[in-house]
Image (cartoon, rainbow, N blue to C red; front, side):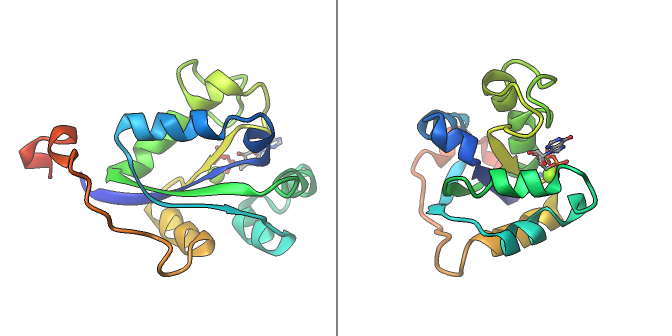
Length: 155
Ligand code: IDP
Ligand code: MG
């Protein structure tokens, strides 16, 4: 149990379908603290780096294209075990297989146009937060609700 920060991207499919507010709202209501938030246009270089683990896959060029169609919303979210919590909220990669109640399970019918990217572990979260946020773009603001979000021994 530790306080973590994680990176979420709201993909162009989410921007085009006017689901930005709805998806951000889910993270807010869950109790995750938004510590970074911005709109940014991705390019081939950052996507080649971000999706390097998929470089050999046939869908790689199409995936990168799909991520440049509109700007994306980059979010830095913080909370206890935030990385795992956000992955659970995102659901399985393919929207058709994702459980109803998850973000992908509720809003996506696609294996590619699946609403969000979410960091998959502590190492990737650290690297990805640095990839998408500059120093000074992540804020450590005080949430007065903190004590109602967590038990004393969790804080
Ligand atoms: P993840 O987003 O659940 O972590 P990854 O395997 O890291 O899944 O894949 C990154 C992204 O690549 C997915 O979110 C999805 O947009 C896309 N992708 C993954 N597998 C496929 C596929 O089989 N066809 C098309 N796109 C895919
Ligand atoms: Mg991934």
